[in-house]
Length: 145
Image 1: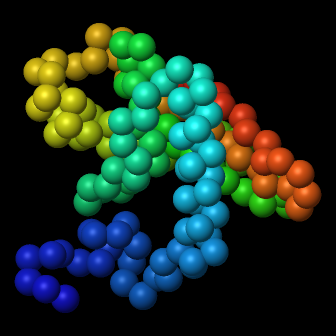
Image 2 (image 1 turned 90 degrees about the vertical axis):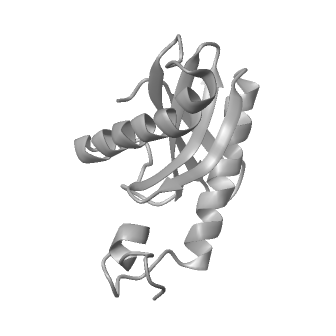
């Protein structure tokens, strides 16, 4: 490890020795984020950033919806029983997304515009189910947290 880079847990959010995402899982996540970004653009939003990372975690998509900034969590699942991606965000995940949003606003938005977005900040969830056959099924829920 290089000096000054911190522990693996600090850099990745995983304990030392904990496995990272597999290639297939990473590819599934990227595909889902591509679909979600397209859905947000079709809804009239502007995607500002994808996969923004800091020491505390990652925001999948950050978009602008009129005067609001949208922090978008993307959940992609293969069609298997009892694993629907729209099961909601646990309170701890919602709290972490709010902390990440505050940091992104400070580092990116306020640094550029000098003030918070007029329309505030919203957390959205895009759930994607990939069936064995047929087109992906997307559901976008606004203001989940």
